[in-house]
Each structure stands twice: as structure tokens, then as C-alpha cells.
Image 1 (cartoon, helix red, strand yellow):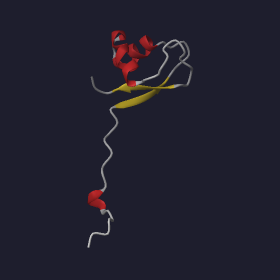
Image 2: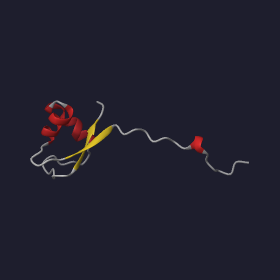
Image 3: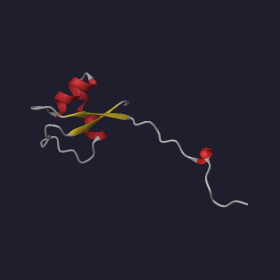
Image 4: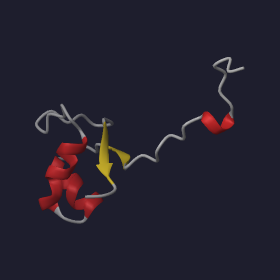
Amino acid sequence: PDDGATGPEAVARAPAPSYREVEVRSGDTVIDISRRELGDPNLYHRILKANPGLDPKRLRVGQKVRIPLDG
């Protein structure tokens, strides 16, 4: 009978994150982070998209920011 128990085969594997996190450094802007982490300052929009609610004018030293690993 099916008692609703789940076995190892029923455990869903969590997908690998599609981003990595970096800490904001003193004086950083989103453009600086984009240049350093993505190799192109013009890709800053990818960082903003990966960080909903991030206010680029209020970055704090030590704040974690997601850097997308793919487009």
C-alpha cells in the first residue's frame, strides 16, 4: 500500500545556483562590480536583473551581490 512515504528516488535535487555571490567593496558601483566580475562594465544590467530590489545608489560595504553565471 502507498503510505505517502518518499524514498531517496523521490527527493528532488536542487538545481545548481545560476549565480555566485560577491561582497561589495569600499567605493564600488554596480558598474565597477560588472567590470571586475563580468569583464565588461556594460553588463551591469545583468547584475541588476539577478538582484531584484537592489538599489545601485545605496550599495553598502560587505553587502552580498549575486553575479549571474549565464546570460
